[in-house]
Amino acid sequence: MNNLKTITKYTFKEQFFPYYPNKKAMNMPNSYVLRILYFIGLYGLLSYVVYSFMRAIGTLYLSLPNGETMYFAFFGILLTISIIVFYIPRILSDFFSDTKINIYKTLPITESELFMGKLLGAVLSFVDFLLFFIIGIYIYFSIKGFDISVLIFGILNFFTIILIPYSLLTGLILIIMRFTSVGNHRKALKNIGYIILFAIIGAYYYFAFNFKGDSGKESQIFTTATSALANFSNAFFNAKFYGLSLSGSLGQKITYSLILWAITIAITFIMYKLSGKFYYKSLGEKDEETKVKKKENTNKSTSFVPKSQVYAIAKRDIKNLTSNIVFFSQAVMMVIIFVVMGLSVGKSLGSEISKNDLYSLTGRFWSFFAGIIFGILMWMNGGFANSSLSREHKSFYLFQSLPIDPKKHFLARLCSSFILCLPFNLVMSILIAVFVGLGIANGILLFLGLSIASLLAAIVGLYTGSKKIIINWTKPEELSKGGLRNFVYYILSLIYVGLLIGLYILLMNISSMGEILGPILIISLIIVTSLVFYKLALNSYKNGFYDL
Image 1 (cartoon, rainbow, N blue to C red):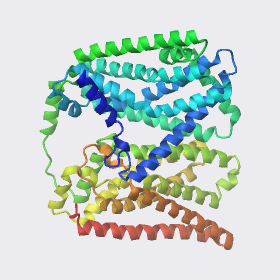
Image 2 (image 1 turned 120 degrees about the horizontal axis):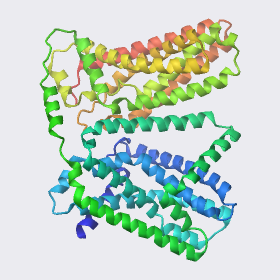
Image 3 (image 1 turned 180 degrees about the vertical axis):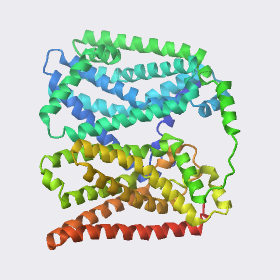
């Protein structure tokens, strides 16, 4: 029992490491000030989403007889879906990471104590979800009036609606890992997880951009979604019982609270027994076939046909980047955001602009200019060049010791970063051109603008990346961390975009030749910026990287 308490306490504390100034957090800024601002922004956004959802649910159900049952059931469904969607990567990392668990195997603790300690500690760390409970209960009281019994039973039963789905999800993963070979394909699972994340982000921005201000359409979609969830609510039995435990008479509240806790204790006991039999076995070593294949791959013959340094380094950089979805996940997310934004803005402008204006000389330039603007904002924040040197990891010292021409080294990484941007630019141009109706010529100009911006972003990224090279990372996610430097760079890119737009509009207003001078000035400014950063980046490569 002491072991269980100790592991629970440490796991609980471990979940709050990102909030400590002396701890580093995955996928979060190293600067503690920026990390605090990140948390404020994150919880502010989540609070707004929960408030909007629960306010709509309250308006829909709390005016009905026994509507509080469905109101609190929907609150439980919201938390349950959040756990299922967002916490699978954390469960895999905390419970099924060989490097983390191997340390515990040397200690005098049982599998059940380790598993249940980590489970209880993780569930107790959901205290931040109490913020959402406060929002939900506030909305309930504002509509129905204050009820002390609802408040008491809501707090007493709160952690059951978290413990049940979290335990079932962890137990399901435990069984799958134990009786299948899924553990040998964690990279594939990770890729699937990122694809699901991309889909969620795309759906979120699609609804955010396309239904803003269309209250009738929003209401119709929301009503349809809530009706579907209401019909399916029995599948979320924890949420259903939670709603019943906060509605009706005092006797009903007590009865369903006891049932809810009985289910929770039963699931916890089952998890304790299962983990005692299968936990360590679910972390089994990779099978012999996998080891043989890996050995065969390492023994592949090496070609000694001479190639240019630019080709060899560019090929290596592309191979490094495409070896892990994490390296280009940020780029994919930025493309999703700007594709959805481009479709939304393009459709709204398309209804106001005639075909003649769209296919005029000014319309074609704006297609080209929009590509530049989108490209700068997209690739300055999610480009591949910033982490090009850091992606070499420990083998970075190889480039320090080999007789590699600095200019060829720089050009190779510039080519690889630029080439990797082109498929994203092409997909984005085709989608916007087809769905907005830009036409082939404007679509090509949009692609050209995106490509020029990605080349500029690659040059700037190689320079900024040469000033902060990280080679001691243990997980690829560490390279995507933000920081004060990255924040400043992105603010500067916003200022640069604002300057381009402002100069063009100014010339259009003060000169009759604005339609000609504007594009010339914009292109000239981009060329000058590219040359300046090209010179700075090339000098960094020529000076070497001996200050690591």
